[in-house]
Length: 165
Image (cartoon, rainbow, N blue to C red; front, side, top):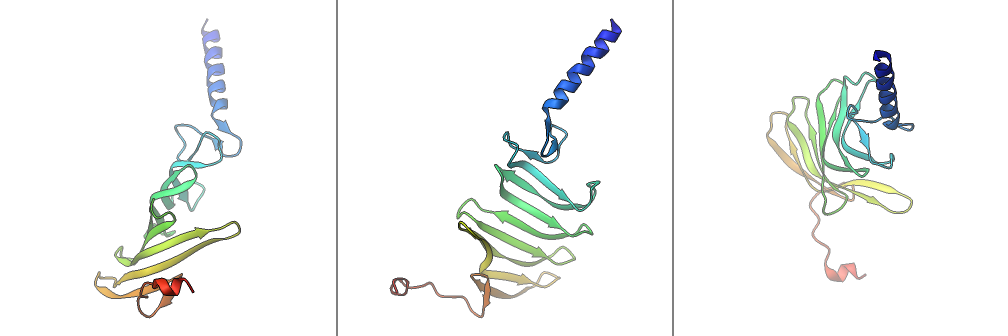
């Protein structure tokens, strides 16, 4: 009787575990940190990347929704210091607020960037005003970017007559 119970439990555990194994990504279940959607193709939910195989040195942490990065992501140096944060916006699509940090944890730069893609290329670039700070938190003169290139002053909006040319 006890032997049958052990055998039945073993079979039950093996059947349950085999249903949770995804051959592409390894075992997936409640114990997994990183998960995929039902198709097994797209990242889903909280996600953590590590510098080492033992998963002790965190490289980044954030969230995916159906394979798309969403919300706030944090990126760390190999020593464990916060290097930058990225906040992905729903609207306009592809817009990201970036914050870079000094080694003491104070913000160094903060501004906006865009992801743009077409059939063949994916482009990431800074734009607009970027606020800059000293390591002790004092404001520095801002920097201005247009299509990823630093410009001396902010650009005036393009007039309607200039757009039609």
